[in-house]
Image (cartoon, rainbow, N blue to C red; front, top):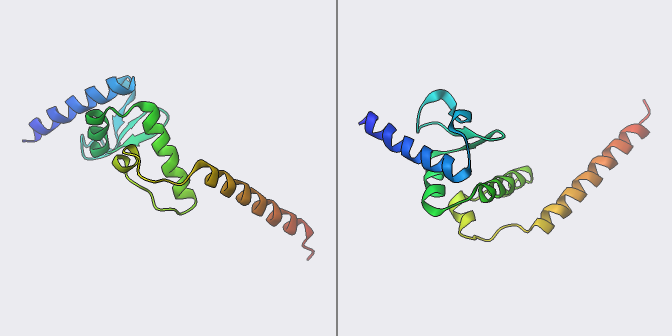
Length: 123
C-alpha cells in the first residue's frame, strides 16, 4: 500500500511542479516523509499534500498560491482568523488590503511613539 501511495503522491508532485513551473530537483519534503510532511519549494514556500491536491485539481496558479500565503501571513500578523486555501480560492470574504494598510500605518506609528518615549526616558 505504501508503494501505491507514494506513486500517487509522485503523480501529484509531478503535476504540481509542472503547473507551478518548478524544477523538482529544487523541491523536497520536510522530514523526508513523502506525502506526510510539507512539500517545500521556491523561496521557502511549503504546502501540505491536501493543498497540493487542491491546487492541481482546481488549477490554482503559483501567483494565486503566493497571494494566498501573503494574505495568511498578514492575518497571522494581526491575529485574524486564517482561512484555508479552498475557501480563499473560492472567494470567501476576506479582510481588504486597505484595512491591512491602515493597520500597518498604525503599527508603525505606535512603534515610533514607543521609540520616542524610550529616548525621552531619564533614569
